[in-house]
Image (tube, rainbow, N blue to C red; front, side, top):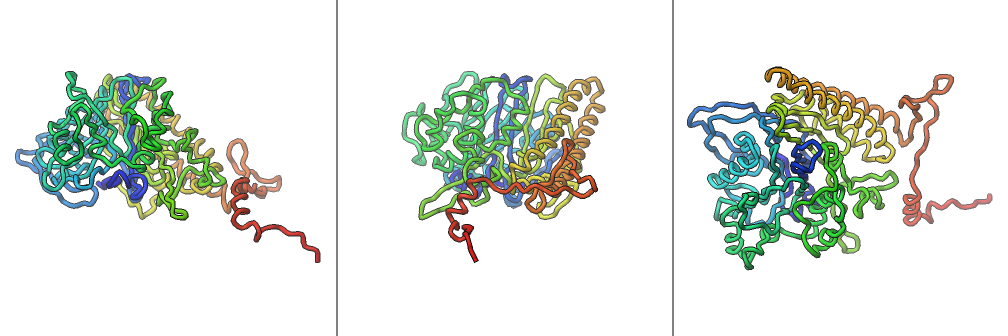
Length: 543
C-alpha cells in the first residue's frame, strides 16, 4: 500500500509541502438517519487514488507482522501478530470502524523514534479493533509498547455510536513513546481537523471517560519547557504544535468553513483564523439542522464559496472563476509574502471518502464508505459497504504515471484537468453528469438498505460486492464519455452549440454550426490594459 503523504510540519501543511489532509465529523444525533459520519481527503501530489482491501485472517501462535513506514517504504521492524485480524476496505473495517487522519507535525524535536508510524497505526488498528474506544486502546497500547515513529497527528476514530478525535505526538529521539489526548464528540455536534491540532484545554477529570489522555501529557510538556502554568490551564494544541499563519489560515480555516456552512455565528472566529486573536475556534459546534451524507459530500467539494475567502472571486480565479491555485502556495512581491487560500477541495487529492456508520443495521451494512478518487469537487462518490471484500477493478491498484482508461482515478483526472482551465464553462456539464450518477447511486443504496437484510448473510454480502462493482464500472465509463464530450465541446478555446439533450447542433445541411467564442470578462481585459495597454491599443491610422 502506498502511504498518503501529508505535511511534515504545521507551518508547511498548506504552504510549503502543500500536502495536507482534511477530516470532518458529524456525531450521532447530528445526522438525519442517526448515523455517525467521518470524511477524509488524502491530498498528495503523487498519490494514486485506489481502494485498499485486506481480508480477515487467522494467525498461528508466534506469528509476526512486518511494519513498513508508509511515507518511505522503509522497514521499521516486526511486531507480534494477534490470533485473528479483521477485514478492511479502505479506512473502514468489517465492523464499520473508521479511522481518518491529518498530520500537523508539531515541534520538530518531538518527531518519534519508535517502530509504529502513523499510517501503520491506522491499518493495524483497523485489523484489531471493533469499536472506537477499542481502537484508541489498541493505538495507544501499540505506541506504548513499540514506540511512535512519526510527527504530530490528529485521528478521527468512529463507529456507529461514537466519534472521537485523538491527537498524538512523539517524545523525540530520547524516548520512543508518545503523549496524546482523545475526546469524544458529543452527540448532536460536528467537528473536524485539518493539519493543526484542535484540542486545546480539556477536562482533567471526566467520570464518563469521554476525555482520556496519556498520564504524562502535561508533565512531559513541563519537562520540555512548553508549559509552566496550572494543570487546569494546559492547552494541548498550544503546547505541542506550531501555531502560525499557515496553521490557522491554511488549516483551521478549512474546519471553520465546515462550521460556517452549518452553524450560525462563525464570523466570531474570523479574528482567530486571520490573526490568532480572541478565543480559539471550538472543538465542536451544534449544527442548525441535521446533516445528510450528501451534505458531507458537498462539504468535501468546498472552495470557501460565499465566504471572505471565496476562491472564485479574486483575480487569481481568472475569467472562468477557477477555484484552484497551482503550487507553491506562497509567493513574494516586492519583498512581501502572500498566500493563496487552501480549501478542502484541491486538485492533488488522491482519494477521499464520506464514511457513514449505523449501529442499527446488520454488520455487513453497518459501515458505508462513499469512496471517490481524485478531486472531490468533480468526482463521483461510489458505494462501498464494509462487507465488500475486493476492490472493484476500476478502483484497484494503478500507476500515477501511466494512463489507464479503465481506472476511475484516471478518468476523473481527465475530466477535472480540463475544467481547471475553463471552470465556469465546464462545471455545469460536469455537475449534470455527476448529479445524475450520484442520484442514481443514492436510489440504489436506499433500495439495498431496504431489501438486502431479507437475504441470508452470504447472499447479502455478495449483493454489496455487486453494487460496488456495478457503480464503479458505470461511473468510470460515464466519466470517460464526459471527458470526451468536454474535449470536443470546448476545443480550441471555442464552445460548440448543443441542444437541450446536450447533443451538438448541426446546420440544415448537416455541417457543424459555427461555435461561440466565450472570451474573457472585463476584469481580465483591464489587467491586460494595465500591463500592456499602450502596446495593444487600437489606433486610428489614416494612410
